[in-house]
Image 1: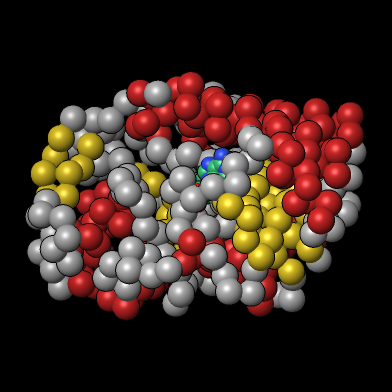
Image 2: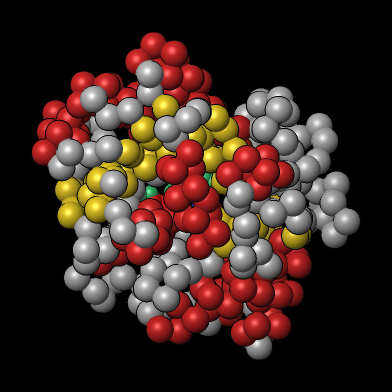
Length: 327
Ligand SMILES: NC(=O)c1ccc[n+]([C@@H]2O[C@H](COP(=O)([O-])OP(=O)(O)OC[C@H]3O[C@@H](n4cnc5c(N)ncnc54)[C@H](O)[C@@H]3O)[C@@H](O)[C@H]2O)c1
């Protein structure tokens, strides 16, 4: 299939592109490089450097490359920033996504897999979260993603667009070729391992007074390669139906547990400092992924912290400057 990957120069998009190419698909990466890296674009993918809000370029790209499906990952991803600067998230994650849907309708493209998030749920009333649980986001990042999900249902009803929205929980790990490299970095695993290798002096942890066994937030960590694999299954299912799936493992690990695992793997002391809680962070988020296992046959292979941390640690050893010294 000819597939457009928006955000394909970013962390998850670059690894998803690897999987798509390995599965015989032809990929066009569409990314404005606001957070992504030219060097992360797969050598076998075509590359269009443009914004998804640029409907003209987008529609032309969809038509010129005879695109049959879109994997839509392009977005801003920082929860904290979305609380401080909500308009930025409404504009880029919601408004620009709707213009992508319009471009798809205009170009006659009827399949889309959308990167949604656990942040659509807000503070859970019970755990693990299932797709039927109430969605009540507590930050604009989650609100912007939920708004796109709602738009997808409308475009499904009114334009026959078929979609799968994948609600990712916390994604980690690397492939041999690509890994997470953001500036600034706001995700826990890169921050921990950058402290382990001495790039950062001390690891700042947001809050140690949450109502969890050790006082730090609990999250459900999923390996990026398992996540990429779920997209391939979603793509194959798109002919028959539309729907929403959680992607997690059902296992919660606290921030302290992730740090302990990283100490074990790296042998580094990883000094930490506790600071104020960050607004918009629920105490615990864990997913039930039973629906995607049952309906699409998803089988995560690397669903443990050691594999997630180990693969990313290896990538950092091989790429100490990330993409900064690559073209
Ligand atoms: N990393 C996680 O744990 C996680 C969890 C849940 C959901 N997600 C979702 O997965 C997707 C990918 O996340 P990531 O961690 O790879 O982030 P990332 O920042 O590494 O990748 C996003 C990419 O989108 C591009 N982009 C952003 N706005 C754009 C625009 N307007 N036009 C064109 N390109 C644009 C950026 O340049 C970047 O390359 C996002 O939609 C994110 O919300 C990620």
